[in-house]
Length: 83
Image (cartoon, rainbow, N blue to C red; front, side, top):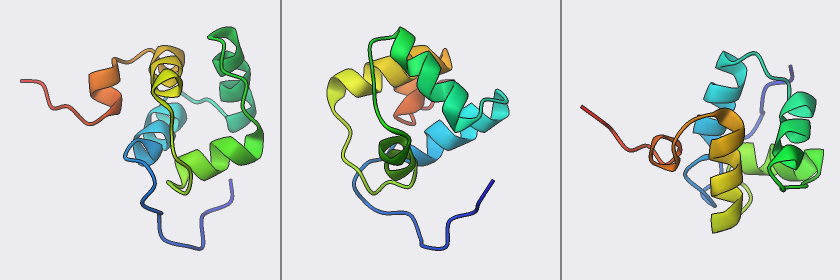
């Protein structure tokens, strides 16, 4: 896996969480993209990379599909802390 040479952007707050959960689950970007398609979200590899790097805005319907594909809640994806 290539590491980013640039610092994260500021277009979204979920990018780093997507990377962390996706890699913890052993999913490669290509596999994750296929899983996103099963939840009705068809984005390009470049778009996913930009999302994960926080260089791309994320629509509300995308947040929902991403959370479902990662099998986590939207709250978890957004960084909500539960006790």
